[in-house]
Length: 331
Ligand code: LMR
Image (cartoon, rainbow, N blue to C red):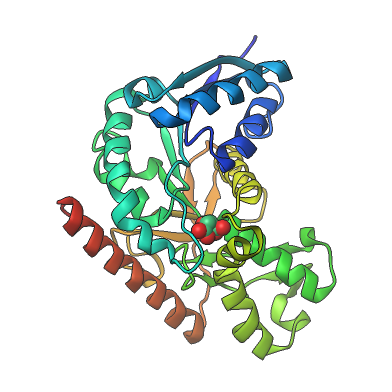
């Protein structure tokens, strides 16, 4: 029997990430080759004209899985009955800015989107926040959508995991598929911690293959944390195709029972590994057979790792304090 379509709302649909993302969703890369999808494309008013062109191109691909395209600037239409809300649209940072500098600009957008998801989406809707600062924006959206269970909110550090895996693979001279069990901990900001201590290269510990401790601590860790800024400096615009790819990876792996490896996803913490409860922070996530996610237990963290993770989570507490103060939200 033919499956009924999964309805996916994408904000910022005519933006750079949207343009790299929609065609992959419609092609089946996100939900599989036999799963129909309907796309709710959400833009701000000035984005509606270019959005029409994007929708025309989607039509021109004749994707067999794409059953419907909705184009709108009205959030209540955009999130109507959606199964997934991919919150991509936001003002991107420019050279010289940190993602947290966007809090004042983007924070309020996520209040409105959270409310509209609450009132219009399916109660089972899952939300992935990409717009920066994504961890705190996700918390803002979650607090603004009290009827949607907290465990259905996610922010994205898969791009950082993918970046970190490639950097280790290149250093070790192995294919990237050899790198596993690499968790990004904390905030999607330069303070994030890519835990090389627990990473595997093939069957070996990464630190047995890459024995250059100074490179791991002083080059690898900061390079992963500042890769977004390096892309902006090189491209003159923030990452788009790689960010879209990480959204596909995130959603696909949240829908698929894990086959061994875990992945980095930002979720609402409840004190795992000493992380303060009540922030959206990046943790190692596995999906069990019935599709429920859980934080992987039993990872042992070095004192160095604990210190790095604590600093990143302290930054998230501070972001929460500032944003919630500005927006009048209660913790
Ligand atoms: C990235 O990591 O590339 C994105 O979050 C964009 C940015 O501002 O860094």
